[in-house]
Image 1: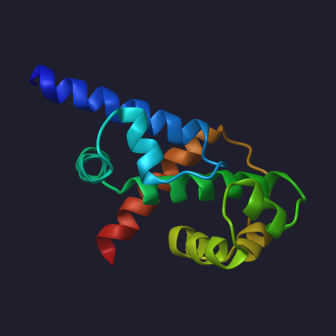
Image 2: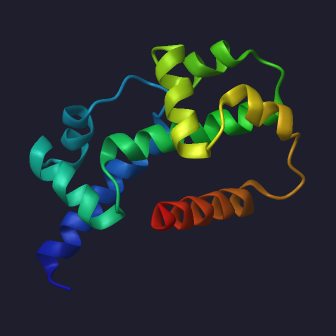
Length: 137
């Protein structure tokens, strides 16, 4: 791997870490690209090439993953969770949640109680299921 590619990958990892830390805040591609010191268009292309999804989709998935935890582990309302994880409207939250998880938030909550396995195991399983579903459609 060339030094240039290695440096680009480090910058992209820094940007992805920034998304992970600030997922609930209003984020856009220009702000995230600034963390990596890359132009927004080049950042989006490189991020997709390296991580397999756009920065926006990665952010949405992280927000949905956090909302899944909150739906299972708390009794907060779906609306409250929607805003707590960074979505600006209940409609976009519900639509995105259904696209990623396969069911609406309220149905997910009804069918899933608190988890007794470590979160890292559950997230790995969720990502594997999501990849398999993506290949089948």
